Length: 178
Image: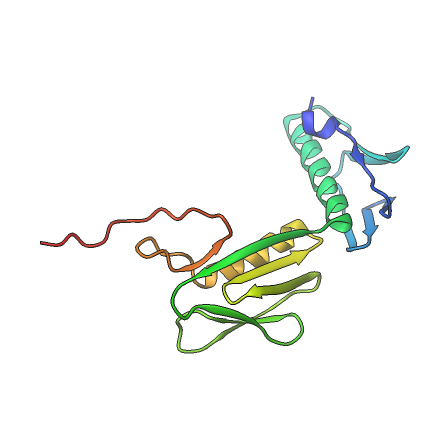
């Protein structure tokens, strides 16, 4: 049995769930949709979402836990939301909010880099070296944060670049002197 898939997902106050061909979760932070794979059934029972499967093959067991985890993330996303914080390290490296849903990054290139937020994601710049990516969709928030990090990943010699908050960079020793 899938240990994750058996656990019910509790539906918090202010969140509505519709189950049909696809699962639609609405809450204060937005609306998310998910189409479960064939053989996976979702039902609402007394304030909880239950995920069940038809067969007992290895694939079905894996999809059972996956579907439950994705639905739980949807419920948490529309009620509380997700966020990733990025830290910019380097002399002259900084971020600034530019317009609605855009940030301008100075990363040591000859030009500033402008990043636009996709629908459902918002940016916040609490300081010149911090960027907070927020949204209801966990996968989308992580993807946008990874794309921003990819613009200038941290290098191992001085540690300059964009990193996740709290990320440890393995440092290398520089060139050995005589």
